[in-house]
Length: 120
Image (cartoon, rainbow, N blue to C red; front, side):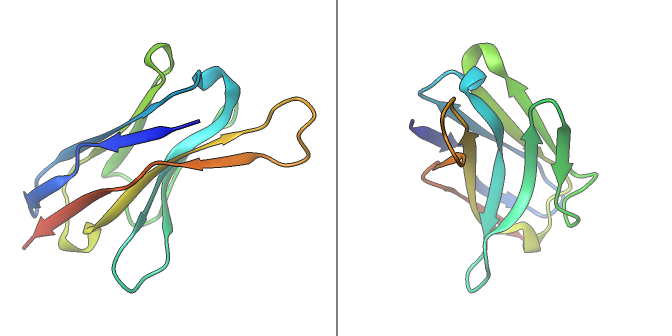
């Protein structure tokens, strides 16, 4: 499974961006999708995750500003980011978890990352 992330860029504080991730496999084979981010010198942190049948969770720092949406027919998911802050600057990675029949543990897939830079 390959994931391709896009949509990053440079934006001023208070602005918006929409990230997109497309998968090479059907989303029906996944049990969770979402986004993580990693800023320089920091650990990768959860931004948003959608676990199918359970709903969507957001990191506390983005709750109320970011929205994760899915387009299952196109095998895509999006991260709409609004009210961006300089501390949102990071490389954003999309991910997908796949648990197939017979698997003992889910398989994790990652996109290549897309840079988001928010200027003050």
